[in-house]
Image (cartoon, rainbow, N blue to C red; front, side):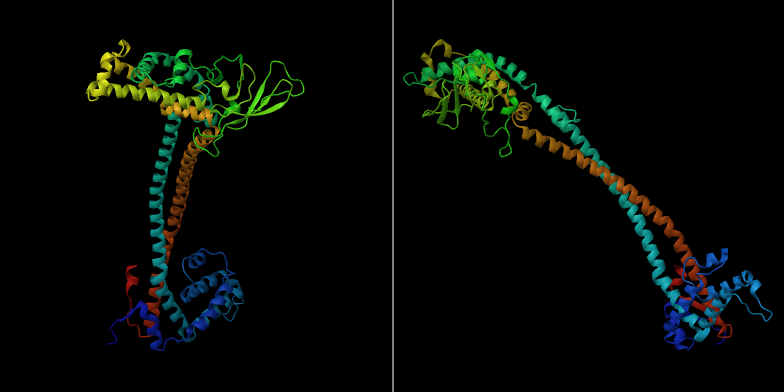
Length: 497
C-alpha cells in the first residue's frame, strides 16, 4: 500500500490538499500579503540572466523564490555574516517571502491554483489568440484580393465611361465642354445632309394635297422644309423670315440651368440687352416679351407701351433690335432646343409616314388608299423600292440626331447642370476605386500586425507550457516528501497541453 503511487487530477489538487489538511481553506487572504511583498522585493533585483529567465513567462511562485535565494547567495555573498546570515536587504526580503509561504503549506495551495489556471485558461487563451491571428491573416488576404479586384473593376469602369464620352478623364468638366464646342459644326453638317430629304418631303406634301384637296392644310413640316431649302439657319431668320445683319454670340447666357429640371428642360433666360433710353436711335426699336401674350414695346422716343398679343407666341424670349440676332435667336435651328425639338417631331412625322406608306404598298391591305392612288399624279407613282430608299435616308438622319452621343453633346451644350452631374458620377466611380485601394492597403497593414502578434504569441505558449510542467514536477516532488517518498502523479489534460 505504501508503494502505490498517488494519482491526483490537476483540477482536484487544491481540494485534495485542503481535505488532507496540508493547506487551509482560506489561504487566499495570506497569499495576498505574500504577493504584495514579492512585488516590492522584485523592484530591487541584481542583474543576473537566471533571475531574468525566472521572472519571464508566468507568475512567480514559491519554487521560483527558492531559486532566487540560491542566486542571491552568490550575488550577495559579501553581505554574509560570521553567523551564516545575510545583512543584504534583498536576501532578507526573499527569505521572509519563503518563510511566509511555508506557513500552513500555503505555497502548495497557490501552486495548485496556478497549475489549474495555466491549463484551463492561460494556455487555451494563448492558443485561441494564435488561431485568431491566423484567421485574421487569411481574412485580410482574402479581403485584400477582393478590394484590389473591386478597385481594378472600378478603374476599368471609369476608363470605359470616359471612353464612351470620348474624353481622357484628366479634367472631366473641361473635356466635356470641349466636346460640346464641336457640336455646331456637327449640326451644320447634319443641316447639309437634310437637303437630301427634299424628295421624301415633296412626296409627303404631294400625298397630303392629293388626299385632301379641298381642305386648307397647314404647311407640311415647315421647319424641316426650311432647313432643306436654306440649311441650318439661325432661329432669328426662321422666325422673322429675314437673315440677321449681325449675330451676337451669347451662348454662355442661353445655356439652360436645370437645377429644377432635368436634361434639356428648363426655363428660358431673359436677355435684357442694351437699351439706351437717354439717347434713342431712329433705327432702333426694342420689345420685351414678359409673358406668352404680353409685350412691352419701347418706341424711338424712349416711351414704353404695353401691348397684348392674342395670337400664339411660342418663340424665344428676347430683346430685339432690327437685324440683330442675340440670345436664342442667335442659335441655329438645330442648336436651339425649342426649334430642334420641333425639327425632330417633323422628321419623325415624315419617317412614320414613309414607313406606313411602304407597309400599305407591300401588304396591299388598304384598298381605299390603293384605289385613290390609281389616278394619282406621276409624282406619287413610285415603286416600293424607291420608297424604301427614301425611308432609309430619313431613318439614317433620325438615328444620327437621336443617337446617345448626339443627345449627350446637346445636353452638355444646353445644360451646365448636366455637366456637373456627369462629372460627379464619373468622379464618384474613381473615388470609390481609391477607397477600395485604400482598404486593400489597410488589409496589408492589418495582416502584418496580426503576423507580428502571432510571432510574439507562439513563444509565450511554449514558455507557459514549460513553466507549467516544471511547476507540476516541483509539486509532485514536494507532495511525495510528505508521504515517505511515494510516487505522486498529477493527472489530466495537463499532460497533453
